[in-house]
Image (cartoon, rainbow, N blue to C red):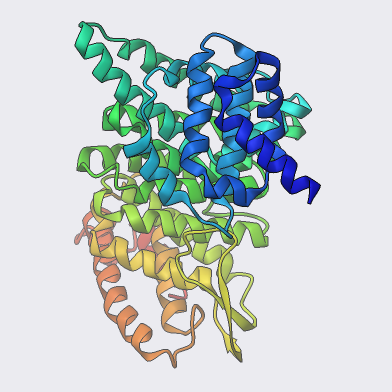
Length: 448
């Protein structure tokens, strides 16, 4: 009962912030974390108005800026709680009820201060809480900027260049965080990677599509030291970037696809050790390339090579009867699964690789396959082995008739492409009978 009374007193004090002394107001902001969640939810718009009013009224005072940001994160944390799920109400408030044009520099300065010392234990905890609600923090920053533009237009001035520079500082600070090897940052890094794709669309009001793409590319490049599960979350981020409605223009998607080829390079193909994580990496690579296949150019050949190598590597360790099936072409991690009748032998990674190879065959991957590149002969022979494996039921049971029939058709198309590469580059008609062409001898001795 006493807690409820104190909670109401704190909420009331925040709402009547103009009546408080400086010291009282700072104390109330710090106590907001203990306020009843129901109280906050009932008065959500009023609480937001109070917090932004305090922020603007105390512009330039770092202690107030930092305290308001912390309080704002606390309120948004309540909003994001699954019990309430009030995210749409915050969106509505930010778009229609929010009217604090001068909150922009205050929020940015406080955010940058928080990012300036991410390895400090207290800052690290606050950062993790902030990243969880990062989309709405950025949404408020962008909404404030839109209001600020209207004010500036009335007096004939603009601070857009400064604003863009400040936003870039935030993203550079996030990149620096990803490059920092400190163990304390693992949780912060994971949250940023998990949520980055939800933040980027909020920038659309002030940045061009290609500028946002460059931010995304620069951030993913900064994640090149990701290890363990962070690698899997990085791959999910790349998949989410591929699916963003923000990147709709073909030229933009082609730039993203080109960068993706480099990002995926070390995560699939051949390996000496087929671990569970490596299989998961391969599966996410399949999901990513599958979403980009319609805009691929020369990258298509590289993905074909990687898919063939991955298939042969996984095939070499065999498959066992399964009791569970995880969703194919997963878009999240961990992968959702469901129980199935036991005793069926299949491999989700092989099923996805077979489907991806079919997609690449539909897009005529062979047009980009460099016949004179070292290893091409090996890949072509391995691709024949993949065909035999799929038709032989190693990826999935032959009793899965619809899938079996589909792959009969798609593999014929792949064989046509392979034959075209061989006949155009390795088997001149005048030398075919003499076995003088290297690949001819290789094919003759191949079991396929």
